[in-house]
Image (tube, rainbow, N blue to C red; front, side, top):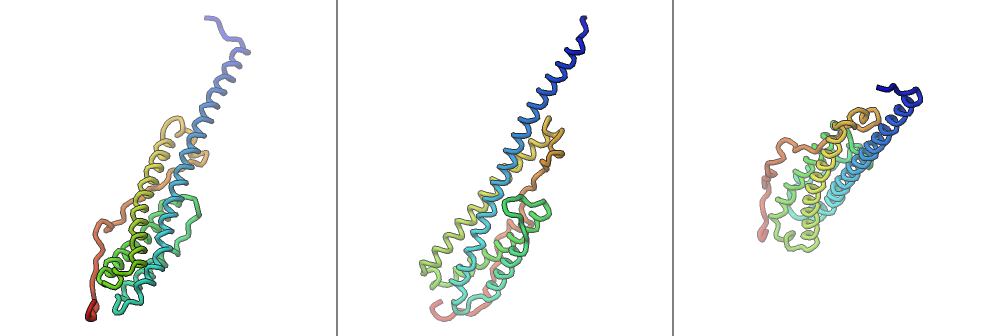
Length: 207
């Protein structure tokens, strides 16, 4: 078998380097696209949670003037909403797993308090007859549905990205290039249970 000349060996080395470089560029570009998809999905999650955050004060104002309304429920809403606001997130950037779990726990607490507020409000015919109140209630219900949808989409895009960075050849250099795993949304313990509602007030005639 004829040996390759030094020039031929050099040509093979250069060709191999070019092939590897092209494959590496393709993999890198694919990972960038997947990571951008995760960031975009996270931005949508933030948007729908912010929508709920912004709607709650209007809803509270609609019910807090109602005679005999549960003051403890309103206090719980205010405290839960404040706990969400205390968690600092970098806009448009998926947080690390520990921060996401802390943020999701605060959001779950707020969602539970909101669920109890909605349930208590159902006990007031005056509120149920108020079109503005009913409109807010509908917006909140729609927002809760969007939260579920966007969380699912985020987990799907995170799964696609996390799977790709563990596959060959991406696994060889993903970490060195800053492609690290993204966390998932997980069900908070107890979130599957319906909100507990206790009525600790006396109704006035006609209520």
